Length: 62
Length: 214
Image (cartoon, rainbow over the protein chains, first blue to last red):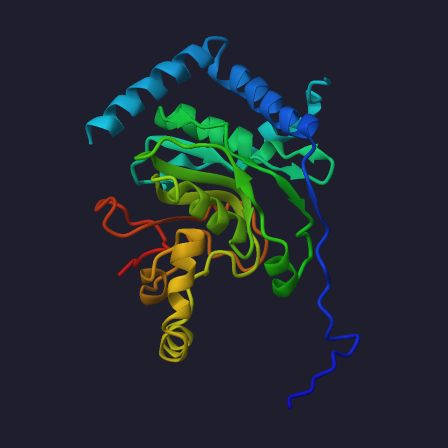
C-alpha cells in the first residue's frame, strides 16, 4: 500500500475565491457602459444593437 | 445601487493610451470580448477600456454581457494554486461570432483558456487574444515539443479532456511556435502579446499559442 504524508511545505496553498455579489455584477455592467459611452459616444447602445442584429443575421445565414 | 467610481476608469485610459498597438493585431474578428472581472474589491477597468478602444478601432461589436463570476486572488500565486482557483464565467454569446478576447495581463493563460472554453462551448470561435502586458513565460504558452510528445505518448486519452472541458482542441498539443512580439522576459510594458488559430485567417502572422508561426 502506498502511503504518503504531506509535509507542511508540500501542502497546497488554497487560493482565495469568492463569488461576485449581485451588486458587484451590476457594477461591472455599469462601468462597461460608462466607459463605452465615454469612448464610443452617447448613441453607442443603439449602434451596438444595430451591429448585434447585423451579426445575428449574418451568422444565421451561415 | 452605487455607480462605479469615475476614477476607476481614468487611470486605465492613461495606461491603454500608452500601450495600445492595434496594428499588431492583424487577424479578422467581428466581436470583442473583454475579461470583465473584479480585482479584489473593485471592477478591473483595464480590459474594458482596452476592449472598447479595439472595438472602436476595428469597428467590431463590443460584448459586455460575459462576466467572470468569481474573484480569484492570483497575484503572486504559483501554478498549483492557480489550478485550484479557476476563473468561471457567465453570459451568452452569439453562436458563430468570431471573437477577440481582451485582457490586461497574461501570466499562465488560465483566464484566457477558461473564457475561450466558455465562448466556444456556445458555438463561437475565438480567433485570438490580446493583452497589454505579459508575465514571465506568458508569451510562450505552447508546450515544448519534447514535453508535448511525452504527454501524448503517456496520456493520449487524457489529452482529449481539455477539448471536452474547456473547449480546447487536441492540436493545441500538436502545434508549436509560440513567440512574443514583445519578447517579454518579465512583466513588460508594450508586450502586446496576441495569438491566433491556424487556418482562421491566412494573412495572419501573429504569434500563436493555438497554432504555428512556421
